[in-house]
Image (cartoon, rainbow, N blue to C red; front, side, top):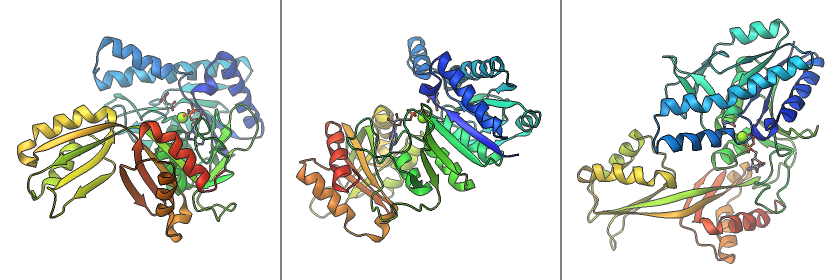
Amino acid sequence: MTTVVMKFGGTSVATPEKIIEVAKRAIAEKEKGNRVVIVVSAMGKTTDTLLELAAEISPEPPKREMDMLLATGEQVTISLLAMAFRSLGEKALSFTGWQAGIETEAVPRNARIEQIHTERLEQALSEGFCCVVAGFQGVDATGNITTLGRGSSDTTAVALAAALGAAKCEIFTDVDGVYTADPRYIQGARKLQQISYDEMLELANLGAGVLHPRAVEFAKNNQTPLWVRPSFSDAPGTVIQEMITVEKNLIVRGVACEKGIARVSVRYEKPFNGSLARIFTALAEEGIDVDIIVQSISQETPPSVSFSIKEDQAMQVYRVLDQQQAEIGFTARDVEKGLAKVSIVGSGMISNPGVAAKMFDILRMEDIPVHMVSTSEIKVSVVVPEGKMTDAANALHAGFGLI
Ligand code: ADP
Ligand code: ASP
Ligand code: MG
């Protein structure tokens, strides 16, 4: 029998009525002769509400307890959905992350799945139950509940699909597929029929919130056919796969944006050997994600290095730098907040020189200053003032013919 994994996000399970709709949709899939696993998120904005609740108790709550708290959101949905199945006359069982055998590393709030012990799910499936699994959570080797990062119910679904050898994994959400850019902000964003794993991975990493990046990574590594589909209609959505067969000649396939970026600059009086390694080792040890790095060494000006981080980690970065000022040997540091990253992504860039030049030209014509740049074979990212992010994304989206 074929196994199918279906995942429904927060807005798709926001009310009891919607939960009943989800159960009906899954039952229709089972009636086609499939074994069905359903992964769900917390209802509506529950996770945000839980975060606010914790903030009322403590400004920096223990991460272990945060995981314990946040995991409750998904637990509410799985129990209600299993009840909905029963009320519709269908056999179903709910499973938390640990009950579903999802073992993770011991990293609270952002754990990676290490392995999945599928025996319990396999047993339930073979007995004809629909399995309802809580997304976003697992358990570490010592038995602590862990969570996998915001938006990571997608990852639970794709990882389960891979572990169970599912024929496909469908991510049902509040849009009808993957668009050329976030349709909430970009006029004329267009639904894509297909997108490659590599392009989707870049877009997801660069801020396209429609899929969690690790979900795409799992799908690519296991060659799992992955679909993003609307939960509000039967439309086919977008397929994410290794090679695409339509619109192959598009150089840029999508535009992604991310707010809340800051640029930290560290200045020296004279060159300081080994200093770069020290800075980034110290930041890595604190779990701070550094994105774009630009070093400037010239005869005329004192050496400096700038790097971009998430704005909310700025205080932490200052603390790490100041604690190690003597070893790092810098004389001044400052931070510029209120920035955003706008990126263009497309596999066609590899063989088309001049894409970055065209990007800068489009931004220049719109009077948008570029603070930092980073490129790879299939993307170019620029850091711009946050107030200009949407203008920049719209201009690039239109300028590269995505409308
Ligand atoms: P869910 O709760 O179902 O997981 P999310 O809010 O995480 O839903 O993801 C869906 C949202 O992703 C959409 O409402 C859309 O605004 C946003 N989004 C960002 N970039 C894209 C894109 N390129 N294509 C489609 N949606 C996108
Ligand atoms: N409920 C979690 C969140 O809001 C996980 C998810 O929805 O994917 O981030
Ligand atoms: Mg999501």
